[in-house]
Length: 126
Image (tube, rainbow, N blue to C red; front, top):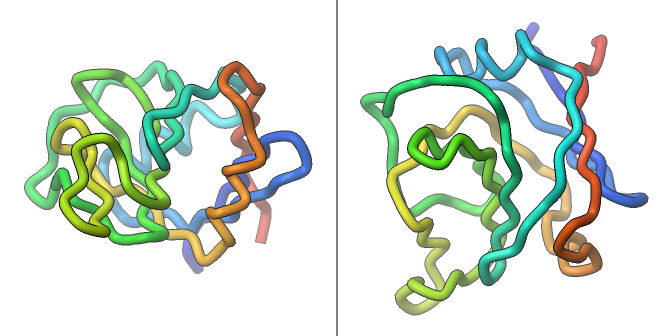
């Protein structure tokens, strides 16, 4: 059975199924933690104090629902629409990122959040 975590901001909960990657393992090992969110277009990102390198499958254009870690910025990022550098309707991040989780949650609810909101990320026991 795969590991899952919950990302909570205000009354919004995002359930994430972790991939079997080094990044996912390192994030899992530090849960739970809190941070403050920032926006960049239709992307939120927040600090996460782990150290990992870019993985072979890292990418800068992601699919809706992919949850990533940005190694050079030490941040978790959740893209759910266009960013300032997107071409057409793609979700283009500022740099290559490691995909560490997948979510089927409605990420568009992130539009109701604001810069500086507190995010809590914690393990889900399944």
